[in-house]
Image 1: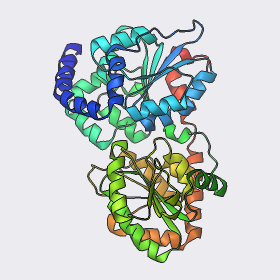
Image 2: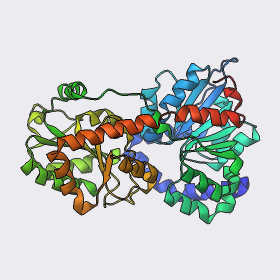
Image 3: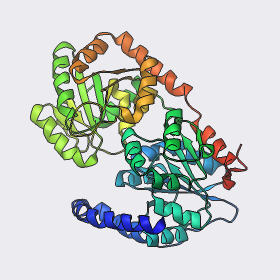
Image 4: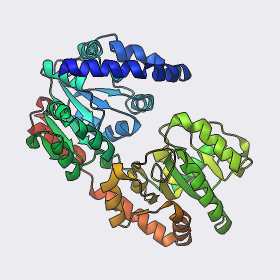
Amino acid sequence: MRTFYAVIYCLAFVLAAPYWLIRGLINRRYLKTLKARFLGPGRVIPKSPDKPRVWIWTLSLGEVLSARELVRVLTENGCDVVVTATTLSGLSQARTTWPTLPIFPSPLDFELSTRRFLDFIEPDALLLVETDIWPGILLELERRQIPKYLVSARLSPRSFKNYKRISFFWSKVLNLFQAIAAQTSEDREKFIALGADPDKVGVAGNLKFDQPAVETGQEQKDAILQETGWPDGRWLVAGSVHMGEESLIMASFQEMRAKHENLRLLIAPRDRHKFGLTWRLIHEVFPHESARRSEPKPTDKDAVVFLLDTLGDLARFYALAEVALIGKSWPGSHEGGGHNPLEAAARGKAVLSGSRVSNFKWMYRALNQAGAAKIVEKAELTAALDQLLSQPGLTLEMGRKGMEFVSSHRGAVNETLKFVSSKGMPVLRSLD
């Protein structure tokens, strides 16, 4: 299995090399991480003999934020935590979130890379958050008899379909984990359908629900407006937007602006590489009434459409919103799938999304049933916005139900740790 995978991975890496080289030349921050990805941190990370070391592997910014409470509980219970992130945005967020912890880019899946990385950090266990399953590192951990756990695990319809094509391979990979703590019963069934041992797969909930409690209200809104110099008013916040959705949202905003006074729109693209392109789109439509967070100007107070082009700020800026629109859910130059609506719901914001939310199907269905969110098609967006802006009481009620929904589903961290502990995670035997 290891030889087969190594050949496939090397071939894929060679084929993808031109893309990554071009991307690295465009963004030299990526090139700066290549040495660590290939050869490890370059130094042994000092390890306390009385503190078990837990390696937390995250993919991107979303998984880093999901892992905050998990890391807190582990460190408070005497664990030595090392965090890796695969993407640059995740790496940046991890270093901001845990400035005192060892943070590294996730290793490439070459045998040399994985061995050197493990030699440097010497983990006692791996907790892989949500996705980003690399067989090479799992095989090396298996060789070293280091336990491995997949937590807050989920499979998108696309991933499940692709994995199913070679389930003979993925069944072996999944069974390298000592336990898989799935987000929902649907996810559990998907892992079992791929060949995972049913006794290893449980349901422990979604770590995203266990984010630190946040205050939200006029005070938080005023603080952001003072910080940015932006004007007060009734704000729509479009979060995690992908290319093609900006035009739809701006068109609806234009119509709403004619009916509702002091209306503002904040657009936060999901992909930081698209910040410049999104700004050009906004500036073309609102040449004299647009502003971007990264380049504040005195004239920002007169703008009506704003670009949030700073990383890690979206959750906080939902405090401005009367209505939150969650991207990657309406037609555009993307495959759809949706993004996490919990950051907005936890702040008491009415949530609108399109119907392309297959990656968070259960979450949107549950929010919709709770009366905290509405799923609207492209042609229905303007009418849905008009209804919410015309009925502030309805909007506030949706926000209240969203906060209750998030609060009622907390506890995933404790359930996850109890489950993996029951499956033999040695460093957690002392945890309650």
